[in-house]
Image 1 (tube, one colour):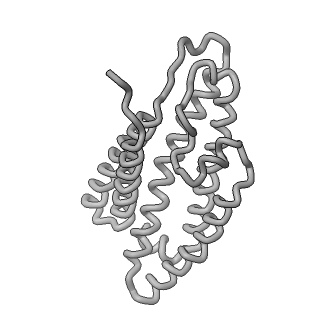
Image 2 (tube, helix red, strand yellow):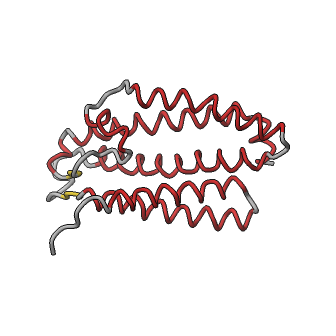
Length: 194
């Protein structure tokens, strides 16, 4: 059963988390590079491509080594190992399922977004594949992200109810929380004049 696998193979789950989080950063850098190639004639994002404020400068500079990212990535392992150990010791594996569901399922949503963006960047390489120009205002980028996260959060919530799963509940809560953060960030940027 998936529940038993998660708690009894915590190191495998932590490794999956670490790889997914690492992929998130480097796929962002890869797409940012694509946007500086021929794609820049057709697609532009106001402000930074990166939605997480703490990583915006590193992504904008296309830094392959980000001290801020590396520190967060390294700190996550002992913290998550501690949560796994405490959950097991206290007989509350649901806590570990909830936390890992939140982290892994949110990363799954983000990695799907990266896959879609990179597919657009790669598939549109032949000249004439794209016509015109699309410019995303900052508030729109943030609200589109929020809408996508709200959609997945709702889907994960329904799965958590149907399957009585703490893992999917964690995914639902973190996606809804992150979506709410992106919506709140969007309110700091002016809407276009109508």
